Amino acid sequence: MTTDTVHETEHQVVVDAPAERVYAMIEEVGRWPEVFPPTVHAECLERDGEDELVRIWATANGAAKTWTSRRRHDRERWTVSFRQERSQHPVGGMGGAWVIEPISGSACRVRLLHDFFAASDDPDDLAWIRRAVDRNSTSELAALKTAAELAAADQRFSFDDTVPVTGSAAEVYDFLNDARRWPLRLPHVARVVLGEETPGLQVLEMDTRTKDGSVHTTCSVRVCEPHHGIVYKQVVLPALLTLHVGRWLIEEQGPGRVLVTSRHTVRINTARIAEVLGPKADLPAAREFVRSALGANSLTTLRAAKAYAESAGSGRVVP
Image 1 (cartoon, rainbow, N blue to C red):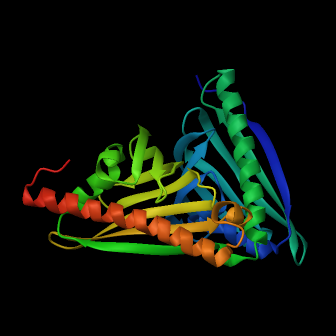
Image 2: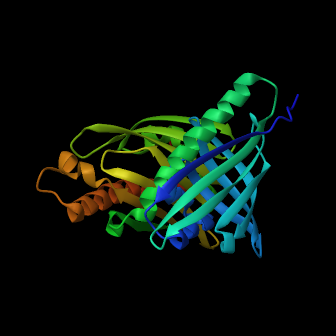
Image 3: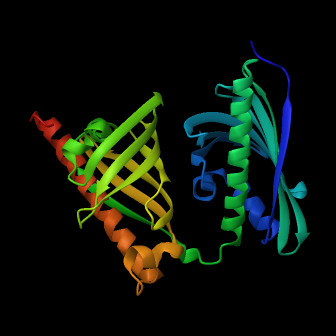
């Protein structure tokens, strides 16, 4: 049974940044994974004037969820309203608005409003929704404030590594998608736990070996699109990062030829540079370390995917 009792909440934060800058971050949904911790991936499916349909993949109370929402932009009122088109259990329906209120030329108040009802009359469902809304709203507003106020842009940077493959996109995708087999296929992967309750939406916990032999654990949520690629976001990060979003991109170049790219966007955790790299390390050293470490692992994975796809194409048996 679906309850029709609608509940409302409001969360707010004061941001020391101009209203226009904050509004732009909310308006451009493709940037959300870099701004909001719960958001793994977001894309605009269609737009007509000030109305758009977006799809969002995010975590809620530790679970990976996806839904589509209709959004309406009102720049004159500094407002973006939203309404979920197809909610996921236990949510029966949800909507709300981002409202930005200028305080001065360099500060504003952001109010995040929600209205929602549960998919059933089970009080546990309503409690779950309340926890998720409160946790995500608090997290998102704090992250929005940090991103809007952040002056040191060089903490964030992106880079790519690409390899050509003489093989099929399907075989490359199979290698990247089937991460359960990575401990057998990749020398830097010690352990993998992969969950996929919703097809194409994976939670990947992985132990990675570093050059000095130590092992660190990360957890990522992955959005998989056969046979074009996988977008992911680390939700449990190594100490040196406050952000890591990435993409495995598979591009067909012609019959039996593809380009495979590993793309990373990261933000350095400046507070832990000395702890991780030593007291003499600075931000450029941290950037170089991260680029080298992630790039080395990416290239190892890309080359293994290349060998897998090319072996499959030749008929050779591969693990």
